Amino acid sequence: MSTAWALVAGCAVVTFAIKAAGPIALGGRELPRWFASVVALMAPALLAALVATHTLATGRRLTVGAPTVGVLVAALVMRLTGSIAWCVISAALTTALLRAL
Amino acid sequence: MRAGIPFALAGLLLSASFGIVARQAGLPDVAAIAMSLFVFAGSAQFAAVAIIGAGGSLGAALVAAALMNSRFLAMGIALAPSLPGGVLRRAVQGQTIVDASWAMALRTDGSFDRYFLFGATAPQYLTWSLGTVLGVIGRGAIGDPSRFGLDAVFPAFFLALLMAEVRNPRSRGVAIAGAAIALALTPFTPAGVPILAASAVALWGLASAPRP
Image 1 (cartoon, rainbow over the protein chains, first blue to last red):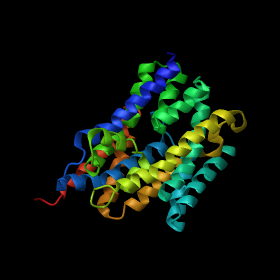
Image 2 (tube, each protein chain N blue to C red; image 1 turned 60 degrees about the horizontal axis):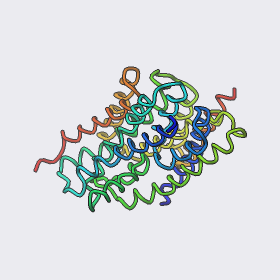
Image 3 (cartoon, rainbow over the protein chains, first blue to last red; image 1 turned 60 degrees about the vertical axis):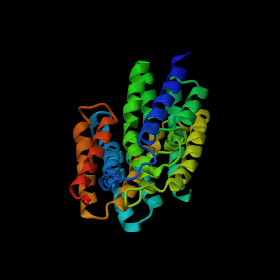
């Protein structure tokens, strides 16, 4: 089997196992009260981490670049219009324009 | 399902660039498409292919994919109590976890609307596969995908979700702390670890949990 196919199969198995682990181990149980309050805060923590690392890092280096400005503009557009579509379009347009300069 | 459509459209563009990048890294056409069909985890696919493309080992690529996906472990644990049925059924239902659907299916009480999760993920899976095919076929015509600012599309989406999420001071504090931890760890840990570590900030919820 070539490296490419080993990579595809390996990634498929790894991803399946990671996504399945929680549901297999803890599925269908009653929620303890403390669990619910922790889970409710996971979304802001994870989303903020995703935004920060996608916007301010390239690989392991912290960087400020065209996408940083794009996402800042998107935040402003989101606040002003409340539209996810405009928020995303403005991010891509700003980034593309800055790269074209 | 409608909630997933904007993400599906963005995924179409992103997976097209994955198709291009995977080909550049030397993956055969069919392998690139199969990867999107059977892995369906964008950040892990990009990370793994980048390592193979740079001449890295298969083991290194798989470790990178696992670390990138480690946030799904946390998301799966959070989701688990909302999934009924046998072990196999729960394992399969867990495969529908993707960032945007997971965040949108989360209710304020910490439980999940699983049908919302499945519905929002379905169009994203469809366009993720389709986009990869388009990228593989049209790579000559598209050229360098970063020219179109596509790399800003996903953070902008996550930001929009985040802004809807942070309605009270506590969630705002958690978001700021999560971002700070992720950025602080980025130079020192492999990709993916900073994001998983940031989820630990949610333990803040313990401090104010109602005592039984």
